[in-house]
Every structure is written in structure tokens, then in C-alpha cells.
Length: 436
Image: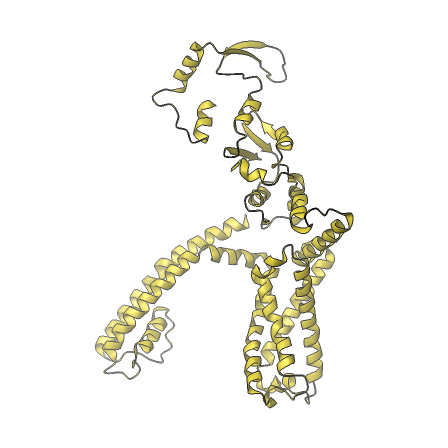
């Protein structure tokens, strides 16, 4: 045990001496004590043994030796060992692991660590909270299970005191208000929190589909005037439906903003920004276009027309609101994010490949073929060729250009295959890990 503790603390073990030799030296020091064996419920039997200190109460001695903030601490959760520091745990004294008196009863002499027979995937998020002070709920874990784990470790109460309740204010009224905010936040974030939450999210998905349908049909020439000209038969019906949809999105966005745990962090969430961009064009359109000016085609203010057209581009982001309702899509986004280094490598290699071979093709074909009148045009041909799209809008005509074109096509297939295998392998690994 001494040798193990020295390794954990970063102290090199004694060189050229085995543990047996170390035991002999300690035996010669005549440091003897008495302790009791407990074997299969048998409390009898005391023997004298020579060791380097008091074995009776060894767990207490070991724990006292490791109570310095800079020392490591091992936590065993259902067979999986996690290693952290007391400094990390002591930052939250109101929790189970942050309170030395409360965690002491979970010390295991056999494992020489704190042992908890709890949910292992949830403890990753529990430890993440101790390390960063922020929650990261585990994926594919029932929220009720995670809530019970947080309650056991005392994190739920700690989080409410640290985030929601002002310092020095612990009145019952404040507790009630913050509890209601938490319930509403969970209601909007998790469709499995209640049946009504599932219905609410169902309406959200339905309105997203309808708004995307409006966006598509509004671009059709035969339907466009129905959306833009108030003199048309169905203009007001479509306008009222659109107002109902945008009113729902606005109400949902406002409630999320008011119930977000940390309002300052609200805009750091990617989906919250998408929600804002999806409803912004509607209100900009009301201000710039007005309801009764006869549509955007009759607008006299050209600057307002340009602003309206630019803002309407952001309506496309409504389709990304679907990601919020799919765990698999969220896992895919996280897997792509973890493979961003490989994706950047692919883009860099593609850039070098296109510029190099586009320039060569330009100097080969520029004197014989008007299609290759610039390096930019040649780079476009290289991109179309190596991706095996082959639009046929431009092609080499000289023998040298055709020979070089075949070389580019063959090399392009190999060029894309090599980094793509790395990206697919990394993506598959991350995707399977997140699904577990």
C-alpha cells in the first residue's frame, strides 16, 4: 500500500529494493501492533504482526494522508474507477462528495477508495459538474434516472442555490418561484417530462412543417401573389395562419428566455440563436412592408425591400429546428464536431489540389479552348471532375489536356478516398460512443 501511495503522489518507488526486502527492513524496525481478522463473519482471532504503523484504523490513516487538496482521490462507481482531486470536490461543500463528513461513510477499506453502487453513465455528468460547475446531462439516459442521481449526490439543491437563488436570499417565496421556473424549463426542453410536454413539442413540429411549406409555396409563381397581395382570395387566411405559427414560435422563444438557468448563457446555445433568426423575418416584414401596402412588389422604398429580402433568407433556418427534437441528429452533430480536425484537413488538401491542377489545366488548355479562359474556370472544372459529378459544361479538347484530365480524375478518386476513410472511422467511433 505504501508503494502504491507513493506512485499515486508522483514519488518514485525505492529503487533496487523489492517489496519483500522493504517488508524485511520494516520487520527489523520492530514496529509491531495488534489487529483483528474478520473472516466470513468470524469476529474471533487476534494475532500480532509487524508492520510500519497502526493497521487498526488504516482506512482513517490513509484518508488523513490524502486530505490535502492537491492529492488525488479515487471514486469507484459500480466497478468503474474515477480519479479526481479533493480541490475539485471541495468547491461544492453542500454536496455529498464535497462534504468530508458525508462522504466518509462511503470509504471502502478493501478498494482503498470511495465506493458508490450507482449509475455509471450518470456519474460522468456528475463528475463533469464538479470539474466545471456546469451540467451536461448524459445522452440516452432517462431524465428521471439522472434526476435521482443528482439528488443522491446533492447536486440538485446545490445547483438551485448557486444559480437561481440570489446570495443571502432563501425565502420560501423565492424557492417556489425558482422551482416553477425549473419545471417550465424542463417542460420546454424535454418532451418526456409530461404528456402535455409531448403535445407541446408535437405542435412545435407541426408548425415547423407548415412554416416550411409556406416558404416553399411562396416561391411558386402561381401561388406567390396569394402570400403577398392582400387583394387575393386566400391572402388573409394564409396571413392569419402565419400569424398563429409565428405567435407560437415567439411565445415559445420568450418562455425559454425567461426560464433559462443563466440568462447570460441563453445566447450561447446554438438552437436559441436559430429560434431568434427564424422569427425575426416575420416582424421585420411587418415593419418594412406593412400589411396593407399591396405586397412587396408594390413597395416604393427600395431600401426597405432589400432589407426584407435579406431577412427572408433567414427563414430557411426553421428547418434546423427539427434537430432539437431528435436525439440521433444531436448525436450526429456532436460526432461531426468531434471530427472537425479531419474535416479541416480534407478542406486544406482539397484547396491545394484544386489550385495546383486548375492552374496546370489553364496553361494547357487556354490557347485551344475558350472554356478555360481563367484559372478560376479551370478550378471549377477540377472540382467537378474529382468529385465525379461531370456536368459536361466544359471539357479539355487538346490531346495534352485530355491526358492530364484523365490523370486528374484518377488521382482525385484516390485523393478523396484516403482522408474520407479517416473521417468515417472517427465519425463511427464517436457516434457509437455517444449512443452507449
